[in-house]
Amino acid sequence: MWEWSSVKWRRLLGATLMIAGGAAIVAMAALASVVVANFVEWQNAPDAMRTVALVTVPPTVAGALLILVGRMVYGAWAARSPVLNALALAIQIAGAIVALGLGSMLVFLVVTGITADDQTAAAALGIGTAAGLTLIFIGTRIKIGSGRRYLD
Image (tube, rainbow, N blue to C red):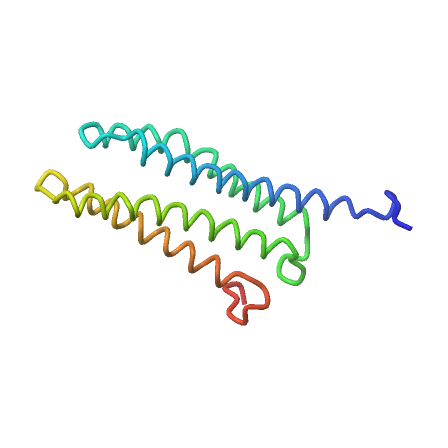
């Protein structure tokens, strides 16, 4: 029979903090991608990107700190990590959202024709797409049981 007295509260609190941090990171990546893809016009792109960053970066950093604090509360830093696969999935989802959003914008820019004014935007979109693909790679390497753990 399961009892509340047998719950390891420290582990439960740590796992909850890590999941909340991962959710915040994924939500901010999705929000930034949706806003950039739907509402940013090329004429005001630098100002709009700065605004999107000001809105999404602080919660993303807070999410990363929640993951770190949750991992410290959970304990046994490298030996026990049942939440690591969920974290790896969250990193892969964030990377996929960033790579798909910015990559599709880059393809659209290339199809419509890159002018001299668009070179900076094209470079930024290419770097963002590469960062998204890097996140997917890192998320894949973190998974336990894959034989390719990043944290070994």
